[in-house]
Image (cartoon, rainbow, N blue to C red):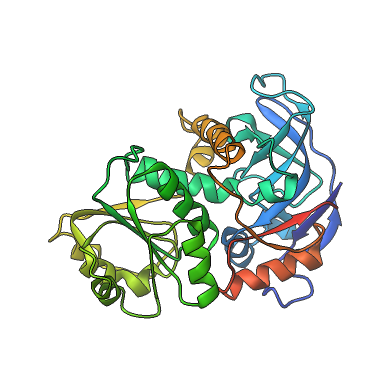
Length: 337
């Protein structure tokens, strides 16, 4: 099968950073599905792994943690899917990724694709939607009662992949007042379009921006990037007994500064369940099923911003370069081999 991989961790500008290769087609066993991949999207985790995970003995490392496709074969223990089903998923970080014609993935982290979307726009959603869902409803335990008003949420980096779905979920499923951050006119417009009540400039001191709008201290803060840069401002603007969640890998931050306000700190990594084979691993299947219903109902929209053509090394290199520039809006998708 065709695949895109790397043998050595290299800058994206290097000709060998990502390569078109051929690999044997894997075989489904246990609870695995063998999926014929139709479309993928690219996430910051792809660039982080490429830059930091050195393949063993120069073996090919296949990236990609967002995909849509069709079930080609099932393992003997599969109960949730059948051959021919259209599916979407993010996959597991400790297994070969979706940048290949076929991929093995455990059925417990797979959902049936929304009927209203084609493969490419659907591929934009799984990883970011799982991350956003777990942040809001599992880590921060925000109420899904739209009548439960009076509390606020600040989303730092709201125009990116996770932010683009997080703002929608918060607006459509909760009663929170949503404040997103963006620093350019086009990204500010995007965040407002997705449902934020207010947009502030994260190139400015965030606490001053909150004060400028006449808003009270924020109950929930979710930081999606540059958490170390914004940490002092978060400590200042968050409400006493507030909740702070993050997904990035900040340089050293002094969490003791959260103590005076009794602020709780919450990490989110959507790969935790698959990485540790947790007892509730099937929860990701369930939330992807519910998300598909929300998409088909028109409640949630795809976050595609860029279509980069077919799935090959050249186009994936372009996608990695754009993500590394920190100027991407929404999601980058690729389709077909």
